[in-house]
Structure formats: structure tokens, C-alpha cells
Length: 276
Image 1: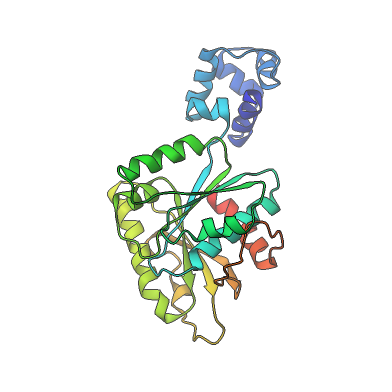
Image 2: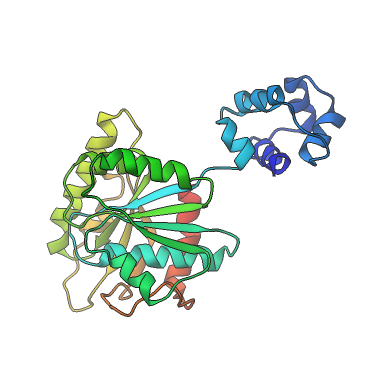
């Protein structure tokens, strides 16, 4: 495991074995033994590698931490939870070796309801009590305890969301996806969500990275061109893929149905490189 993680880091940084061996001050043959797991690597060696690649020591020992992604939109409704379920299913179907944790912080507990209807072996769903004491600290602890068990952690936030300590913690510790419904009624709350996210990131001196995913809920609703013009607004990256007519409120929806639409497959292929 440790040797494999070193190889991944070296290749990710386009570094040859000879170069890394020189930086660590060991022979190439010695590095090869490390990478193949033939010898125990001393702590000093692991520490040097962590410094070279500017990663935590846990990254080398346990592997890369999970990518944390939160879905936020103050519009409310079920669009956000349904989109999260589709993304999680798309990830494990397109990448069967990956594991996903879905955290339901929304009081409606829609994800928990989906999980009760059926589960996937590579997806875990847990409910998070957003009304508990010291909620932000408990959330950070949950992420910390889970980050080396899963490849992706997807967080469903409350629908009508205010900038609370919990939301600040969520925004600060994750990439953010904003579902954008293609009608004029939904645009006001959506723009408000984007502004809140950007303000929180700016206040923490963090770069703003917001991913917009378009959704057409009802073909009879007049669509607005405004969502197409939001690309670049306050750091928003609007994906090309959109989900037509596939996000609907269905109580019998679950995490066990492995039939995903071509739009969801396309979304996953576009989304994962953006997140990584």
C-alpha cells in the first residue's frame, strides 16, 4: 500500500525514480524496493517524501484522502438530494473500485429514506444531526474519521440554508456543487446560494470553486437563458452536461438500482476530472 502510494505521487508529479532517489538520498535500487514493498520504509524516508511532494504523512501511509463534495442550493425541494444520489450511483457504476459516503445533513433526511429503500455495496449513507451541540466540530471530526475509508464523500445540505457555523465548515472543507434549475423562478435563490458560498470562501481566504449542474425539471416550464450566462459568475464553473427530466421526487427511489441514464454517465465523465 505505502509503496503504491509513493508510485502514484511520483507519477502524478512526473518524477522519475532516479530524481526521487536523489532527493531522498538513497539508491535507485533502494527506492525500487520501497515502491515494491520489499523492505520496511523508515519514518525519516516517509517524512522526506511527504516534504518533497508537500502532502500529509497520512497521504503516503493511508493513501489520498477522500474528495469531499457538498451540494448546496437555498431553493429547497428535492432536486439536490436526487442529484446527489445520481452522482453517487454514477461514480460506483462507472468506477466499480471506488467507495462513496453520503452524509445527509438535511433535516428532511431524503437520502436516508432512499437508503432504507435499497443500498449499494459501495455506497454508505449516514444521517448527521445538524441540531446537535458543537455541530461544526462534530462534522469536521466525521470527515476526518472517514476521509481514508472512502474515495468520495458527498454531503447533502439543508434546503433553505443560512450561513451558519455548520455551513461555513461544509463550504470550507469541500468542493461545492450547485444544482441550477432552468427556469426563472429558481434563479434568485440559486444566485443567492452562489453568492453565499463565494462570500464564505473569500472570508476564509480560500479560492472559490463552485460547480454548476443544470437540470430541466419540467419541459412545460419556460426556461431562462440566465443559467447559461452564469458560467464564471463568482467562480462558478458551469458543466456542459445537464440532466433532462430525470430529477424527480420519488419516495421509492433507492441506492440499489444500477440503471443510470446516458446523461448521468456523461455527467460523471465530465465531473470527476473537474473535482480531481
